[in-house]
Length: 73
Image (tube, rainbow, N blue to C red; front, side):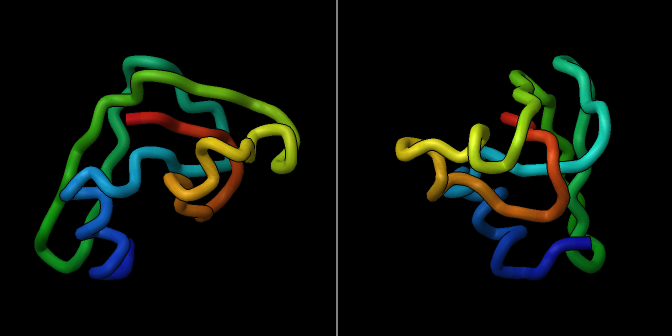
């Protein structure tokens, strides 16, 4: 479950990167749910590493921090 504001950012494309813990694979699907609303997004890229290494000057505004493996959709 995600907050309504974050759900809208994802739905409208304002946020395109999420940090998660675990082993997401390119081509997998990620699911975001807010109440009865559900979004499914295909993972198009993945990066692993320390948080400071994953955060870069050009992408930090697109990241929603939930856990810790970068997932692009």
